[in-house]
Image (tube, rainbow, N blue to C red; front, side, top):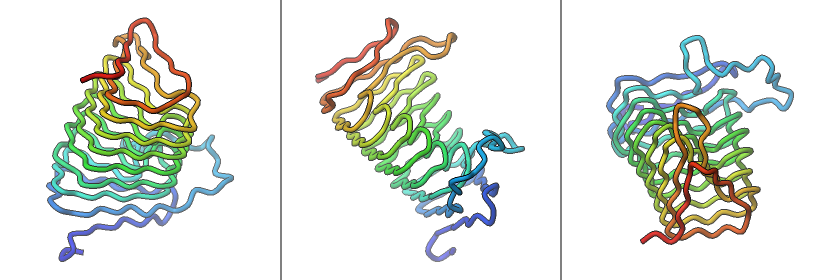
Length: 229
């Protein structure tokens, strides 16, 4: 829809995917409507990468975002939305009913106003190898981590609300995560900071305020600071 600056992708089969590359998305709204994943979906046949080496149902590569909105649901992919080597600012990202990970950001420098992810079969959100400035994240019903930050990433997050996940936030492999306010409930672990890969080091988390009463994991190479000014 050129007049409304909106593109909608509709899956015809669970293996359908889309790629947007080398684009300037100024004030566009992109929607991905995936087919519901059947309860008896055979995960043995699930491949993390498609034949083009992409992991997402909706993929963005070398894209410049400006006041863009992204919305996606369902789809049997490793990532419902995957953004790679991109930059700019995104107004809103909404993801629901992800088969595995909801959102994956790689090798990018992004500013995002709001992210809301509900119901993910694995992590709600993964960040790696980039600079990320996010105002608000709301994540619920994440089977593994609500937010995973890794591989030398820097994340600056204003508010972080999590409910019903295994782990609230994971910062690892020379990543630094800075959060002004976090409220995390109904999780096994509030946060973890550790070294996962041998070629990297530990992880850091800096909280100004955190509300969470569960356990935490911090290895000898990592650090967590609460009450930063």
